[in-house]
Length: 105
Image (cartoon, rainbow, N blue to C red):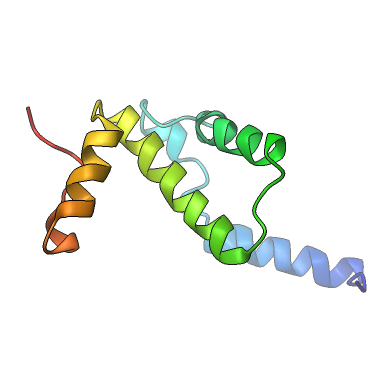
C-alpha cells in the first residue's frame, strides 16, 4: 500500500474535520452523550472475543450474518427484550418488516 504524501493526508483530515464540525463537540452540548465510543466498543466486545476464540468465519457471508445476529442480540439486551423470543417471532412472521425489536410493556 502506497503512503500518501503528508500534505494530502493533512488535507483529508482537515476536510473530514470540516465536514463533521457540527458533531465534534455534541457531548459538550448534550449531557447524555459520551465524549468517546467506549460504550460502543464494550458492547461489541463479546462478539469480537467470540470471533477470535472460534476462529472467525470462513466466508464473508458468514461474517456478515454473525455481525447482524450479534447486533440484534445486543440491541435486544439493551432494550430489555428477550432475544430468543424476538428471533422466534421474527422467524415466524409472515412479513418480516412488521416485527419491531422494541416491544412496549
